[in-house]
Each structure stands twice: as structure tokens, then as C-alpha cells.
Image (cartoon, rainbow, N blue to C red; front, side):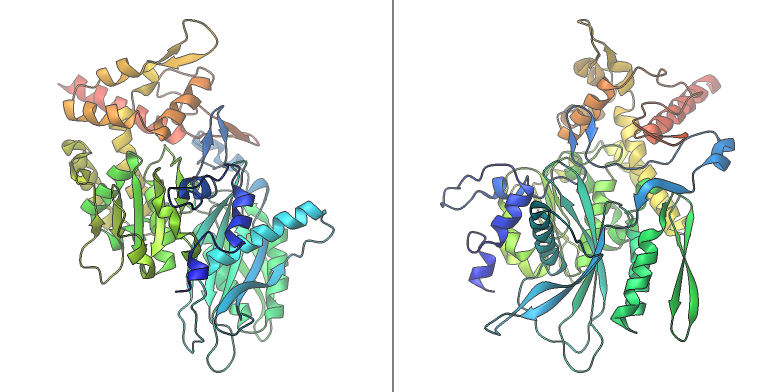
Length: 521
């Protein structure tokens, strides 16, 4: 491991990245080095950072909850959205002294011409960041004769809170003899891991024929409109000896889960272990995941964040921490981090966090714990989640499995905080509404649930959720099953896209079941 590479205060690369993503002044820690918190917490912001004022940093489409007969009027395409900004190929090139490799952009589509000087400088800094995430291990590579391709993702968060997704596939380029792998990376504002994995399959197939075959395919893809949830876009592409192929790319109907594959999470952890991770995440603690595979890290960390729906993780979120940025683990604020196992010795000295080993050959799952993870969630509700999760064995498709898992945890939030709207009242001073926090948690009958909720309402994710509710127009009363399209924030053509609509719908269903149960007694 090269000292010049692993020590963040040497060289200029990290400073370049910091200048791009962080507006926070750098302060030094006790050792005279730039503080990890200042360097990284703003630089690699949250999974979906919310800001006061109700402005979203990420436009996330939730499934429309409109009446069934309106489906025929649903738009086939997401207006104004394209599949990607650009595709880059990152190759490992030998350094000048020939002692190691460093990642460099060897291909970019489309080329950005005619940019102003400041725009070009900004793009160059972005491309530098991309090379780090495509090869987070650093410079210690050696030529290979065999390499299993792997697909993973990362997030780039700008200083204004906007975010872009990086989808990456690493593979061994064509040729004879030993050679280093290369990475194909697509940058897009869209979060849809499954769809981009299919795109990479097509890119890889063309790369095996010729690099020149990638360009026409990506050009067609760039011109194609991004499909609306549940719809398909067709792309015609010519391949020598195969002729013209029609490639069909379909978005899942549950678009709020299209960036998630819960099967990876449950293949690494038992149901009970997932509950312990969820408990730590819901109280916004520091969590580090360890794995050998980059794909495992990125899939698991996105899955854990998705378990928090309808709430969103508001703190540092780095699905794969590059070796050169490993000091981020020292930040005292909450984070979700993915760290490769080869860097394990650099994180085991941390405490007051949850360190989770996802690797197949692990001796134990939790390498570091705070100790109370088992008792954070109310026992009865833990049992209900575990019972609901057992139904995933019946799921026959990834989409069905995702739905079963997400609804198990969504129901937990319905049971614990689903009565929140009853305690959002008009302000006595006028000009909006206020949340009556004390009355809200006092209304909970179960002592263990009340104890949990008292802690949960102190989190930033709950605070932001309530802020947005307070700022919204007063809608139908909670529990009114006649209107499920409430508390909406975006309009897409004639359809209302609801951010908390699914959550409200589940609350309505739960309240209705309770009333029906009472009538039968």
C-alpha cells in the first residue's frame, strides 16, 4: 500500500474533489490534518438529501395511485428525461515510473465540445472522481488473464444537493495474455440499477466485437425517451453477423424500488441480522459494511437505505469508499459506508458504530456493535416484521420479493408513526401548520413502542419528513379511504406523483382493518 496514495493530505487529487463537492471550510483535527468530517460529510452527501423549505435534492418518482381506469391514460415516457449524460471507459495505465497503475479516461461519449472554461474545469473534476470510484482499490493492480466482470453503482452529490448515479461494469478487455481490467461507467440522473445492468450487457457484447460497435448503440439509447414505470422502450441496433436486433428495456412498475435488489441483502444476512441493521439505521447511527465484491457493497447499502421508506437517509452515504478516502470512517456524524475487505484493518479501530461483514467466508457478521441493536425495535413489531418477511419465500420474481420486503418495513412505520397527521394542527399564530410532537408520542398506548418513537422523532429523517408535511397544503383527513392521492409534491403530465402517497394508502388500509375488526367484536 503506497503511503503517498493512502494519506489524504498528500497530493492534489483529494483537494480537487473537495473543491468540487464541498463548500464547507476545511478545519484541521488534533493531528494537524484536515478534519475527516469537514472533508467528507459534505463532499459525499446523503443518499437523498432533503433541505429545509421542502425542496428535494432528488426527483424520485413514486408509483401513481390514481384510479384503475386512468391507467390507459398513463404516459409511456417520463417527459424530459434521458437515459444517461455520458458513458466513459476507464482504463488502467502504467504510471511514468512503471511501478503501478492509475485509472484514466480512455473513451468518452458524447464528447463535450464548445464548453466554457469553467464548465470544462468542472467536468474534468467530475471525471477524476469517476476514475476513483471505478477503481476504488487504488493503484495496486497487476495484469490478469481471467477476471469475472462485476457491476456496481455509486452516487455523486453536488454542492447544491443534486445527485447523479454512476453505474459501472468492470471487465477484462479483449486481447491475448495478461492485461489489467477496464471499467465502463454510465453517469445518469436516473436511479434504476436493473435497467442499466441490462444496458451494460449490450455494451459488453459489442465491446467483444469492436469498440466502434458501442458508439451507434449508445447514440440510439441517448436518443430514446426514458420509459415511464411499467413501460418498455425499444431500441434497434445492428450487429455484424447477427443483423438488426431489437432491444427491449422495461422499467418496473414499482419505480420507487427500481434501484434496489433485496435478494442480495438477504443472501448476505439472516432476517434477524437485517432487523439489527435496520434498527441502527432508523436511529441514524454510523454503519460500515465490509465485503469483497463491489456489487455486493453497492446493492446492500442501497437496500438498507430503501428499508427506511417513506423516510430518507439524510447523512453521508458512500456505497463504495475509495482507498484514498478511507479517513471518512473517522467522521463522528451518522453515515452508511461500503468498504472493501482489503481495507478492513483501517476500520476495525473504530467504535460506537455497527461494523457488518457481508463476505461469504466471515466468521461472524457483526465485528463491532454498540450492544443495544437487538432491543431498539419493539419486540412485538420485530415479530411482525419477521413474520411478514417469511412470505418472500413465495415470491417468484425479483419485483415480488422487493414488494414483500418493502411492505414489511413500511407496515412497521404505519404501526409506529402512522397517526402523525392527526397531530399536524393549524398554527395558533397563523401562517401554516405545526406538529404537536409531545401529544403525538403520548398517544401511543404500547410502552415499548412509545419508547422507540420517542427516540425516532429526534432523528433528522423524521424531522425533515414532518417539516415537509407542515409546509404542504391541508388535504383530506387521515383515514379517509376515498382519497389516496394526498400530500403530493410533483405533477407529471395529467398524473399526480405522490411522495408519501403509498405510505398514506397503507395507513388508510390499516385504519380500515382496525375499524372492521372492532365492528366484528
